[in-house]
Image 1 (tube, rainbow, N blue to C red):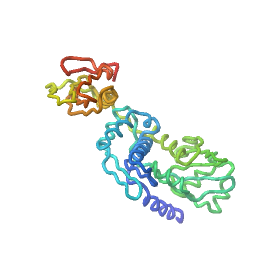
Image 2: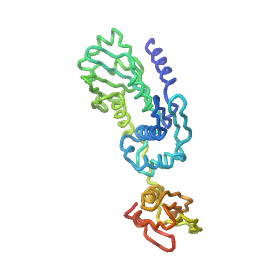
Image 3: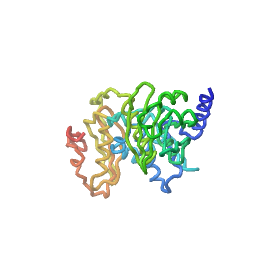
Image 4: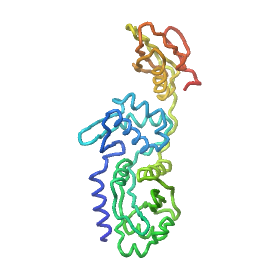
Length: 320
């Protein structure tokens, strides 16, 4: 009964410092540069929602290049905090083929020993890692019964941990043994006698990233493939251009992904200063290119476009 009461108090203590949702990132201390803070926040969010594969995805560049679209709120007073637009972000991640887990992370009871010494609370590195990945961390009391019940030198074997963790009402727990500068760990759950995952890490942040990655891989909601766009009932009009602009209509954009990646490729062409998607209908999109000079003639074939007529193009299948 006493331990259940203490567990409730520990949970309340965590809630006061945790982010409000998995779509909110807080950096404290924050980088001096706003651009660096945004890039760091995007990296953390993607790792949290979809694991490490998301950080190498083109989604990262899309979020940073079209920041207002994916950012709901942003504050820099007392550190840096940003809440991302869930309604815009989830379709983007789905279109990139990433498996996402947007649910709340379960509380994790941490049994850590450094030789004969047992840790009964989080240090700064553990608290920061907990906030980065939105994982509530609980720490055991390590009372006399637990010191007698658990063999600290064989903690990773998990012997006795299930019984000790049940006293705290925990469904998941982590065994951590520090050796030098490395943290050797194993993740256990109430429904499995064997370790769910294991590894070694150089820091609490690296360790919780691996635990979060395991949860993402095993608890994600897999979405059915999105249907492809079809030709619109009425083709988009190209419209008129001002000096230094080139407006084009592109067909064959079957998925939202095609529009995003085409915009990125157009931005990378010589002679192009900027690109904006003006509107879309069915499998067509109307893009306006801002040219480096009125005489610039970018080679649109470099973006995978084949000409159909005056300022009309089609995206080649091989360039999706």
